[in-house]
Length: 278
Image 1 (cartoon, rainbow, N blue to C red):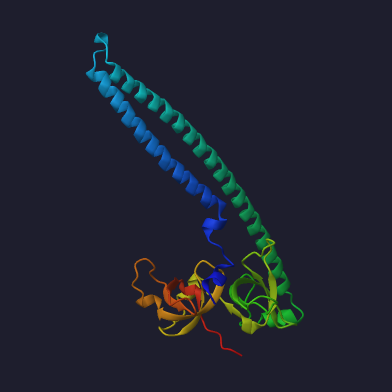
Image 2 (cartoon, helix red, strand yellow):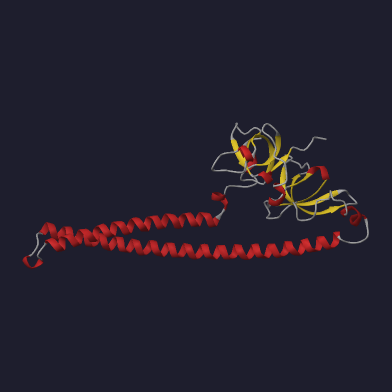
């Protein structure tokens, strides 16, 4: 699978994140403002040197007079440019603040909604009667809210992929997990799937990872491709305890299948044992 298909689920931030784009524009404008101010300082120094060197009571030459006029005009132009640049920066910062506030409000609403859904799911799964209650006593059942690698069911014009998802509940009567994709589709919705247990692998959290044995070099694994929400087959080059790279300590060094032999670094919780084919 080529890299383009891997990243199709998660476009780069430069293309999709309006806030980042705006912040880069602000940084560019700030650099421009700094240059304008340096030029202005240079012009003022030149004007001051002439004023200190010339006795205006005795008059000045036509050439020197023209130089002063040029400096004055340059100073006026730079001052106007500085004012416009500052105004542009203030406007962009105001927009950025508004975007951040809107984003934080939206995230807060989502957190409240998810907490309510999780509470409802826990309540329904703790029912004392029925097949679901009996099944939930099994320690092998993945609890609601757990992050998992989930193998999407076959769909027309779509490749099967292992995606990052969250468990909604386990439906014992169907022996299926109800999971929700962490990524949104083209309509802004998070798709949900009913999947067989063999197509759902729990993703360990930070606390669990400390107790899990490392996967050795040369071992085939299912790893989350950096910058996406998809898992793909990869081979471990170095486990975390042997990875001495100062830029990515504590991570697995892996090579993904069909990825031009490029080396990637993946966090331990996103490197899973390769599921057995059935």
